View 1: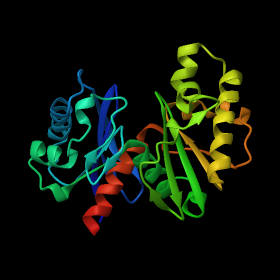
View 2: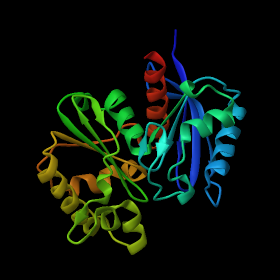
View 3: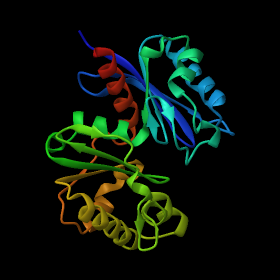
View 4: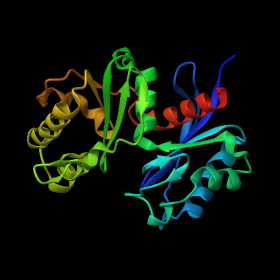
Length: 252
């Protein structure tokens, strides 16, 4: 019997949700995307999450991503959402708003969720060894895996590279903000990846985020020691990974 679970991916500009078939790691039907409320306070975002689930008439287990460090359901950082999230018990917040038992709600970092989806349903090489998944968007999200096991909340987008925060110069948003061509931008990305290579010695780096849909234009320009792979789930990875995490928690 097909295993269906719901995934919600909260971002700074949009909240996306869909039903996920975990046999294949694929969405069932279309996702629903609603704007992230401004200000993006916990209660306001919880209302949007509830609206998405009500639209799908879903009242079962749900996985939810948050763009920040999440430890035991509590949000510790909030770089792209309202600072009121810091210290919020997101699991209890969503459980109460959705009228669910807290055991039926799993909350995790958005990049970790995307990484879980890519390692589980994407490139098979990601299931062994030291694998780094990076998502390039407004910032740079990171997920680190050792033999398929997640090391949560790495936040490697915030490491210092040449005296600046890595994602400030190498995120996809930096290319758009500064009007950079792919050649100039990938030189920055290669430099950023080189710092991570020396620190982690990964055996594979998987490149994701919205810009991965244009991978043919920029990935061949990168210069790295580590083999590279392009994320296969692209913008659905956060939703799929959230659903997978919820399914795993339910099975324990």
